Amino acid sequence: MDHIRIRGGNSLNGDIRIGGAKNAALPLMAASLLTDAPLTLSNLPHLADITTLANLLVQHGVDIHMEGDHEGRSLTLSAKNITSTTAPYDLVRKMRATALVLGPLVARFGQARVSLPGGCAIGARPIDLHIKGLQDLGAEIELEGGYVNAKTSGRLRGKEIVFPFVSVGATENLMMAASLAEGETRLVNAAREPEVIDLANCLVAMGAQIDGIGTDTLIIQGVEQLGGAHHRVIADRIEAGTYAMAVAVAGGAVRLTGANLDNLGAVAEVLRSAGLSIENGVVENGAAGGQEFISVQRENGRLIGVDVMTDPYPGFPTDLQAQFMAMMTTVNGASMVTETIFENRFMHVPELTRMGASITLHGGSAMIRGVPRLTGAPVMATDLRASVSLVLAGLAADGDTIVNRVYHLDRGYERVEEKLAACGAEIERIKGG
Ligand code: EPZ
Image (cartoon, rainbow, N blue to C red; front, side, top):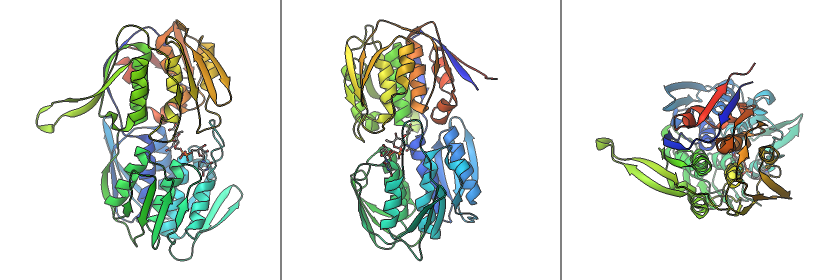
């Protein structure tokens, strides 16, 4: 297995290109199952999770054509000839978002056999809301042998569904299913994440009728058939937030190109409160119009501690909690970080502690007391965002940090060591045995 070595102490200066959002691209790819016409997605990131879902779609019979390179790929997906409505365990267990094929398969083909995803490092992560919502829309569902067996005679039928708590995946799965159901579906207490909005906008481009996009109540008038579309995936706000926090940890001045602060509301305010300067910018590059970027700079002097509590959008995202905690380990003062979305998302804490961080856990909250310096150490990545938080900590640590199991990193971050090295970090990937 590969690992990454970081020698801390260098500041970051230069440009980092922010890719398309992983958590928008995945549901958008699943949406290709809703139509027999081709769906073209551009600005797609080059990530392991995208490959995993593409492999699943191909085994369903989706024809996938890829163009482009690291600077933005496009995929054209055509679900004209679906040969299987089963999503097997060996693919689903690799990446939970594969459960997003459930709604589209039932809505278009009247049946689906999708493996239950099973838990992951950060929590049990059931899909009970997805299943109950499909039953509300008229699907008959049996759980047998670790699989969800869903079927419906005729079309799904629209209904009001009130979520007991916000679920990004359940909102996405049921919005896709409802787009082909008969009649009106209302999704109440729906997720408002930018990735959900991006999916809704793409579905509308395919012919879906969706009102309330961006609010917590989505009203979907089902249609009989959807068509194809060309859709550009939004920039990855979590990748942008991650690199902004890298500047906070290491110091320096960086432009995050291809992204803007629109989808980072609460995060930008928290980072400013800690003492980081972070603003939108536009560079005029002639006829092509300005390319947007986020300008991030940490002047001299240490940042200060700020308390955060994770919350569904537009609150502070759980996917930036580990990175923020790494940032808080070397600030002046203390901070309290409270995780409200997942029940086990503090696995980066013992690893940061091994690097000299001072963190105490109290249930769902972590108290971090800033220390003058971290010291490099061999550390273990456990999940996607915990692994990148260890890279961030390594940027500020004395000596070498070796992050193992970087396959976690590759699921959600494209060429992280190249992007950081290009800005002056001493970081390299060491091919594992
Ligand atoms: C999406 O996961 C993201 N993944 C996650 O990003 C993100 O952390 C999460 O939303 C919250 O923002 C993708 O978009 C592919 P949820 P999802 O349904 O949809 C519980 C990353 O690092 N729940 O909003 O699975 C669930 O266990 C990943 O990129 C149920 O109990 O998240 C969790 O505690 C990690 N039953 C909470 O709700 C259900 O049926 C929120 O989960 C569904 C969810």
